[in-house]
Image (cartoon, rainbow, N blue to C red):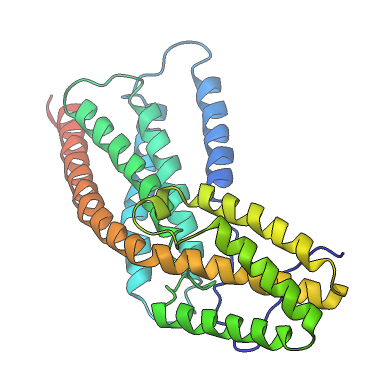
Length: 288
């Protein structure tokens, strides 16, 4: 049987998957910065107060400042003229990671005083950002990054169930095969995942569902390729929608809780950063 594909359906509200490469981009950029840093210190230890060290700190801070402001402004803007929200999020993450790394190099691995507090807080904010990104991806969205509503998911699940029912009525053999496949899927997941486990354990849940789907697809092989492919695609979409419906409410609550922690941490980080910058300017240039 041909490999089952996820076929589009007229009127489908199923969220489209938009591949992002923020980690890959950040790693490449960090590699380039590291190479430049190693070239600079080839003859000795870098001082955070020299021109190159200050340059790392300034550029890193500006990237972090852009991280904190630009994405927030884009979320409040209307229309697609400014680009997809998902792309803005991607660069929000890239700038946050690369900027933080440059600030870390700027410290020359010295973490005393206020600079040490800022560095520690920066690490906490970056770690919090990774957690937020993981929770964010648990909420189904369109390609533009707009959150899909509960009603849309429910409507699509009903539409998929109806399409399966219509397909099953085409012949007794088709009805029997689809019925057996549904039994296999229900046996593998006796209830819809919910709670925190549905968010942080969703990879394991998805792997379990995909293993059950492969077993269900074997049952469909007794049908012709077109019917088997369509049934497999619908069953795949159905279990995906069930996971999303089970996790949506929890993901929204966790995202709200994350914002109440992450935003104040970010504000504290930038307040202390400005104090550190002001003190550095004062003692380096004015206090003579």
